[in-house]
Amino acid sequence: MASVFLADLDGDWVASSQSCTNPLFEPTPPPAPTARESGESEKKKVSLSLEVDDSLAGRVAPPATSLAPDLIRSAPSMQGGEGAVKKASVSLNDCLACSGCVTSAETVLITQQSVAKFREEVSSIAHSAVVVALSTQSLGSLGSHLGMPPSRLVPAISEFLVRYEKATHVTNTAVAADLTLVETAMEFVARYRQRAARPWEPAPETSMALDSETVRWLEGSQTTTTVREGQPLDSYTDLPMLSSTCPGWVCYAEKTAPNALPYLSTAKSPQQAMGSLLKKFPAFQPIGGGQGGKTYFATVMPCFDKKLEASRLDFFAPDKPSPDPSGQPSGTSGQAGAEVDLVLTTVELLEMVQEAAHKQGFADKPAAFLNSLLDSHPGPPPGEGGGAAQALLPRAQSNATSLAALLRSNIGEEAGGLKLLGPVASLGGSGGAAEFVFKFAALELFGLEVEVGTTGGIQWATSRRNEDLRELVLPDPRSGPTGSRPPLLTFACAYGFRNIQTVLNKLKRPGRCTYHFVEVMACPSGCVNGGAQVKPSGSVESVAARRERVSRVSGAMEAGREARDPRKSPVYRLVYGERGSERHQGGHQGGLLSGGPFGDQARALLHTRFHAVPKMEDV
Image: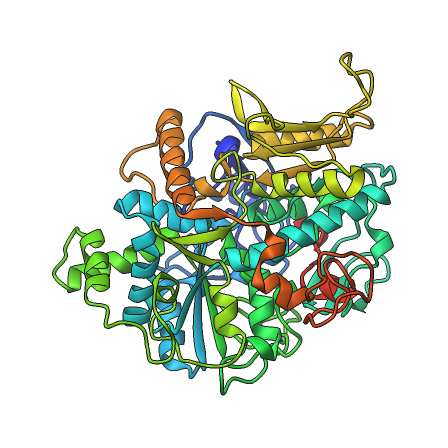
């Protein structure tokens, strides 16, 4: 039996070097002698090694008798001998199928999502295009660490990925964030209009995805259901709506707080939404690429858990390899059917740059190496034009499809250089989703145009003692100076598991939770402080040092961004049509998705499902 200790719920990320916390299982264990026969205690111990702070303690213990779910294969130690320690081999899908850990997915050594795997696949497999999407948070962390402004960092990183890592197109995940924000806002409006009281109990029935169109129910009828279409519109009734773009939070909810799943927004994260567009629409395929077959799509993200998200079978098309004989679904990133083939992290990309810099004689000077790439850049390919926008796609094959337009859609040029276009949060690196949904809902539901964080606008309320739990309130204009009426909307940002627990505890008690929407992130300070961002090495980072670093990264992010409403994005018009901002069905001409935002096709392509994971003793 093994116990899992959470020593730092306020900063619940686990470094990639940490080991899985599950007990080891053997397919056919021999009968063990009793304590009376052996003269020893029947209890066995599995040691756990977790390198985390001890500022907060929590404990979750598995059942007294664990049934082997045949998930983790164990092998004898190389040293052999009686009592030799067994070594567990844990795949990414094993981790997804297991409920033995209560932390984020970073407890597993994820070999399917590594730099070596990326290089192997782009070198050994023929692809019509290798697209790499950089997250804005990763760019902010790299820019802060290397001391490079976005106007030089973005084209330099792009040139590095093309010249040294065989990418053909480099872009930014904010391209698809525009779609995710609008889908999230439309979903919230639907939930608000159809809201109905929901008791915390009972928890949803346990289930598992076999692919993006098939769900197997593990209780009751134990049937397999085909779910090619999105959830019915009238099923969106539960408030508060909790954001779901943080895979660490989703993993936690599915395994330890399944009662919260009906409240989670079903909108896909920008990473997965972009993968859906690239893989499922011929319009986004390069010349010579078939539908969903030839484009290899990788992302660079601030969080190890994004590797887990890309490996969810909910994001694998039905044409993936068949399940293995044991009945467990197979299929890993990089195989046919994956929306996102592989996820690299900020620190992994930095290591790739440092490795190349060392080989080129720039030891310990990665910034100088990247600047040298720009200085030696031969210029844009024929027919592609020039300027800073083109630098994001160096030497990409010229084609007349929508692929190049998609990848350039959030790039702007000013006298100061390249700019990334998209929503800009008043809080800095995080909070953008909550602010956009807040302003969208205020106008859509109440006809009120509001600003957040500006002079004269609505301000976030926070406590000096807890900056990771903030509230945003839309007062009723009819209330008068005495505030006699309750607020029209109450939004919140809850970062870190301590604040997530606060929100969940309110949800459990009828009438205690007054929030309508909560932006939830597992990491303190949000994604800008993700577990895979560049951090000081060799020592534990203090709270003050973390705040200072987060401030620098946020500043680097905002320095390279320019505010733009998501509904003015070229990709938005391409996907939804010229009338995509209108809600009524059938009024969206020329878009790839008929019905517009949150229409039937949008809910099928840009939304997903969540699954209550069965407890280990129930498997």
